[in-house]
Length: 74
Figure 1 (tube, one colour):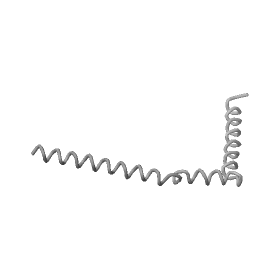
Figure 2 (cartoon, one colour; figure 1 turned 90 degrees about the vertical axis):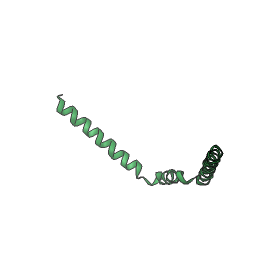
Figure 3 (cartoon, one colour; figure 1 turned 30 degrees about the vertical axis):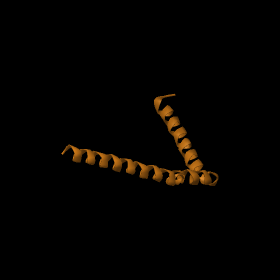
Figure 4 (cartoon, helix red, strand yellow; figure 1 turned 45 degrees about the vertical axis):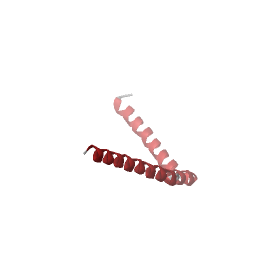
């Protein structure tokens, strides 16, 4: 068996693997799982927005405290 035959066998195996992966990804049995996974970023949107709002409040308080400290020093 020479190197060309080995490369041909490996290429054929990779092609079969790729076709198998494409069939798996586009199978109708997997659609509900993929739809659920696609909606994961939106699952706890309310929870994250509450944290973001809290972070903005903390930043605003820190800025206000720095400004008041600057006014006192002047």
